[in-house]
Amino acid sequence: MTDTVGVLALQGDVIEHVHALQRAGARVLEVRMPEDLALVDALVVPGGESTTVIRLLERFGLIGPITERVRAGMPFWGTCMGMIVAATDVADLEQKTLGLLDVTVRRNAFGRQVDSAEVQLAIPALGPAPFPAIFIRAPWIERTGPGVEVLAEHGGHGVMVRQDHILGTSFHPELTGDDRVHAYFLRLVEEAKRTDSAA
Ligand code: GLN
Image (cartoon, rainbow, N blue to C red; front, side, top):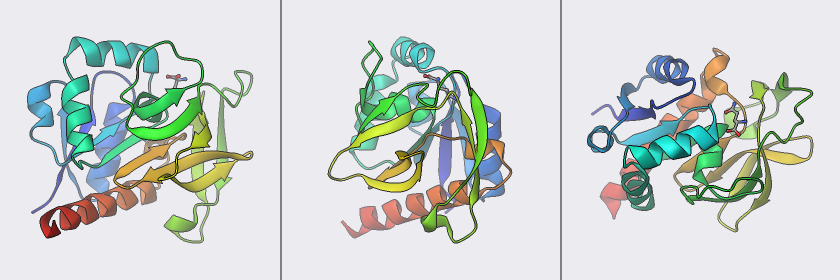
């Protein structure tokens, strides 16, 4: 059966992710309430503003349900703000995050002067062709925990990481029309399902 991938739809570039996931072959559901979360096999948190989204997650009662599902093995992918929200540590954020991805990230790390940039990024896990990575006031990864694999670096810092069924990217694959990271995530969702049913 085709997996249903949820896209957190409280704020940020939701529709771009919905379209990219659909192009990559997923059924997609926008997630706003805990009831929506119960219907999905995986969750993508898009780019946006982390301080706003953490407040909205609290208001909609989503913090507990998301952390429980992801701790129980539900695949999760955070892009930019989504990765900040998932991180265990954020260098310059007062709010509590979901604490799922064992990394320290620094917000707006590539400098406010160069707010956004497109970089041809080497991501060996996606094949030899470079990936057109769009960075928008992007965070970088300053520390990775023992279970975290760095899949891509830019300027000496991690910008794409994976910890088992959790994926984080500093950049925005949903804005490029190159759906290889979305396809990679869908493979990860498939893998997680197989591990689950084998257990
Ligand atoms: N700078 C934003 C934040 O700190 C993230 C930017 C983005 O998601 N493109 O939340």
